[in-house]
Length: 181
Image (spheres, rainbow, N blue to C red):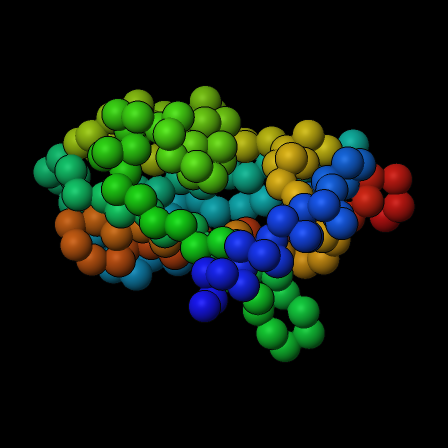
């Protein structure tokens, strides 16, 4: 029943509120290690520039010394309204399978392609190095194609490695009309 309702509501939202002229403004980012013996975040920050652009910097250090070949990513997109969170998207994928055919991975493929360009991740499994996203630019062209209404959103990315949730990253952004701020 829930899937039927979503399949009816989402197309209506797309038609009524097309993303033309809308942008995301990032307000903050939170990174949390759920297992400090496995990994920790050396850097996790949003840098705002004078031109209105922002950049996300993440440096995740792995204390686990062996190659990691069991990686599951979960992305949730929530609209935040007062004291409630409404989930727009909940997508989970096997990263090792994704790394072999990432063009067929729906929203993750759309989101990960630009992220992999500015990171040190070689997009293959097993993962054997620390992860660095060195200034992922967030400007008026970033994610503008996502047809969702104005408001405050949380992008929540969790990573499971070796069958245990290890990291939790949240990025808070506001969707606004490009010419009204």
